[in-house]
Length: 502
Image (cartoon, rainbow, N blue to C red; front, side, top):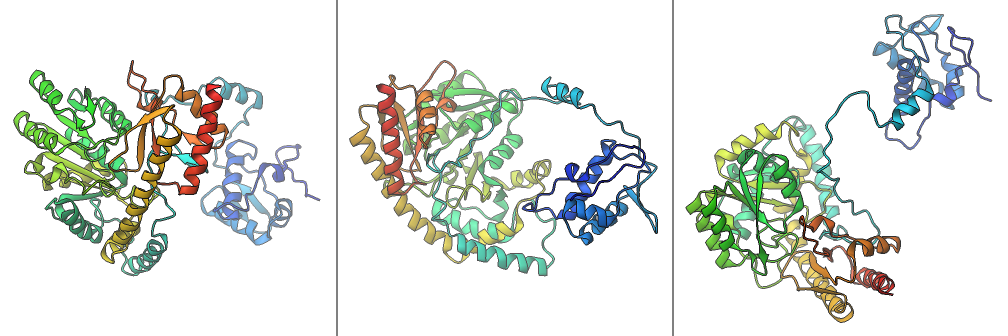
C-alpha cells in the first residue's frame, strides 16, 4: 500500500506517488529525478512556502525507492536552497519562495491548443528539419555503411586518449581551430592525396561539413552579395546562403558539371562575390567538374575577383581512373576555401570535418565558431589523428572503396535490367548515390509514401525541385546496403512501382 501524505496548508491529500514519476532506465540518477520533480511541484504551487514535506521513510515507501535515495534528494534540495531541514521537526519548503497559484488544468489545455506561447519567438518557415535515415531499409542520400567503419580501432583510441588527456589535464578549453595531432596528420593526408601543399595553420577542424559551410559563408558573404550555385545544388548550402542574406544566381549543370560559360556571362553582367560547388561529385547529380572547366573557373575567379567555396565531401570515393585534384590544389588556391569531412568515410555520427583556407582566414574563424560552439570533441579529434597515424583510416578507405565500387556496379546492373521502363540514370563515376529520374507517369512523391509503408525509404525528391521545375528525381544511395539488402530494396521498389502503374 502507498502511504498517504498531506500538505499541511491544505486538507487535500497530495499523492506524491502520482506526481513523481521515476524512470529506472534513465541516465539521470533517481535522487536527481526526485529533486527535479519536487522543484516542479513547488514551482507549480502544489507545495507552498513553509509547507512540510513527508518524512524520508514515508516518501521512500510511496515512491518505492531506498530511504537513502530520498535522504540524498532532500539534502540536495536543502543545498540548493529549496527546502530547510530542521532537526527533530522535518523538511519544510523555505519561506522566501514566491507564492505560486496552481494552474487551472482546463485553462492550461486551452492555452496549449490555441498555439500561443508564454513568450514571443521567431519562426523560420523557410527552413525544414534535416532528414533522419533511421529506417531499417533505406535508399538514403548517399551514406557510408557504418558496419564497415573501424569502430573497434576508434573505440580503443578513444578510451586510451580519454585516460591520457585526463591525466595530462587536457580535457579543458583548448584551441577552437582543432586538435593539434589531428591537424598534423590531416595535413600530411591532404597534401599526399589531394596535392594541397598546406600546413597546420591553413586548417580548421569543424563538426562536419555543414559547420565548415556555415563558417566559410559567415567569413566571406554579406547580405546582398551575389553567389553562384548550380540550378540543382546541395540544398543545405542554398539554405545557409539565403539565410544569411546572399542572393543566389543559378547556372545550368550538365554531364561535365557547372557550365562555366554561363558563369562568365553572369560575371560580365553583375558583381559576383562567390561561387559554391561540389566539384568532384556534384550534389545531387553526382557529375564531376571536367578538367577544362576547372581551369576555366579558376581563370574566371582571378579575372572577376570572386571566391570559390569548394565542398569536396566524398573525394575518396571515385571509381573511374583516379580522382581529379581539387580546385584548391591549383595556382589560384588563395581564392579557394576547401571543405571536407570524415562523415562519408566513417559514419555521420562522427562529426569531424575540416576547412582549408589562407592563414589569415583561419585565424578569424574561431571568433565566429565560439558564438555557437566553443570547440570540437577533443577526444574524438585526437583519436581520429591516431587512426590516420597508424594507418587504420587508409586501410578502411581501401576496403570500403572496393566494396562501394562493387555495390555501385551491382545496383546499376539491376536498375538497367529491371527498371529501365520506369526510370533513367547515368552510372556515376564516383560517390555513394545514383541520380535517378523517374518516368512522368510515376509520381515520386506518391511512390515514396507507398514504399515507406512497405518498409523501404526512398526520397520523395521534393528537396531537389527548383521553383517551377519539378524534376521527379532523387538520389538513390547504394553504399550503405549489402548486395542482399539491395536485392530486398529493389524487390520492394519494383512491387511498389507495379502497384502504382496498375
